[in-house]
Length: 114
Image (cartoon, rainbow, N blue to C red):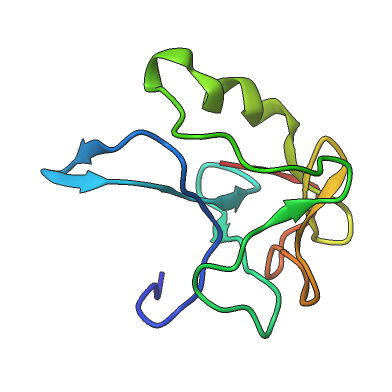
């Protein structure tokens, strides 16, 4: 994957944990059609680092830092999907950057988000 210079979709309110000796403060989201077919979720064109992703059906402010002990990520996973149009969804509500558009999988459809 070419990550340098690319924008991604991140879950940023996770408690920091060490990965390969470096503190990680977020989770980079990707879509997976299988264990070998994976691609990064892409924010809409015109997005900038720090743009907030919202969900039309879930207004409000984001939660504070999520505790790793609560296993929130594992609870969310079954409801994170890419639909038949390539749009990233949570419980059927598209990942959206207000005024800029929807987050999408570059080429995959009908797959999971991890």
